[in-house]
Image: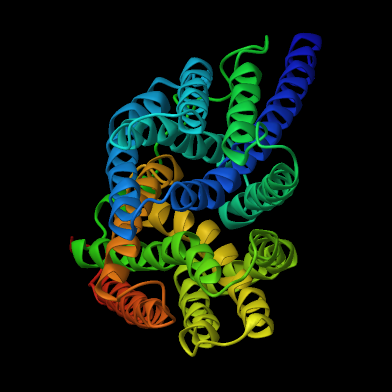
Length: 406
């Protein structure tokens, strides 16, 4: 190998190592913020005396705002290739929104502050698209990234538990603002630009093949992801509120959510192995069925030990959904993971709205809310199975086509 080529290889290797560290730390901080946001905001609004409808509208507007931001700003950032400024600005906006929530303000201002907070959701697909680039199994690479997310989420829950035990000036929403500021600073640390771009990625025959995938497969896949996300968000918003209404303390609620995150780490290893053997679609079928089972103890109104058991059973679901859904959307879209990550985030936000609004049909914060989650998981299972059957039929038709005919 010529000396110049060897030198370039060494520089690229160091560059990749530095980028991997940057992405890892970014995912940790972004996930810690997500934990503080998901648990802290609902309880913060509830503590201020906000009604169920007010809290639901707050999260619906957040979901709409996040979907719009990912479709516009998120797509622009990925197409442009360089994400440093965008990630930093999104984190700074989220920090300002969180700090504003911690201050006295008119109730109507909650909605505007919420829209600034969800700027942080644009960052996740940026990090994932960088982490997923390269060779090897996409499901394994995303599972590794998801493991970092779980560790960061656990760290965020730990910060939440610490904040509620300290004095009133150190609240979870203010701690979240500090975490977002750290993420904004990280994005501006000096480093070379270029590796976090996919602009030099050549389109292959696989890309053209994906573009010809039947519309029915795309619709069934997207609908299944939407339903599974609605389940995830239903739990995220309503489980803490359900627990509080049944006299469970905030520290115990944090333990419930942390338990799921701890079990997620080994579950991710099993999910990655399963996806490599069966594919992302069949893996998600298994994951959806596990999700349905995990909600049964909640739907039946079990005591705190049953809630703990439900959270343990829930871990493979949330681990599998949040890793395999991105892979699945990358498989059914022409540009692969790059567009799959954006599509996933948009579906996440639309699904979030369903997960927030559907429980409004149930009075108060009762166990009947979680029957909606069971039915949604079962419906997603049917959609995924239908997509697999349609995909298999299409493959058999192509194989049966006579040689020379197009």
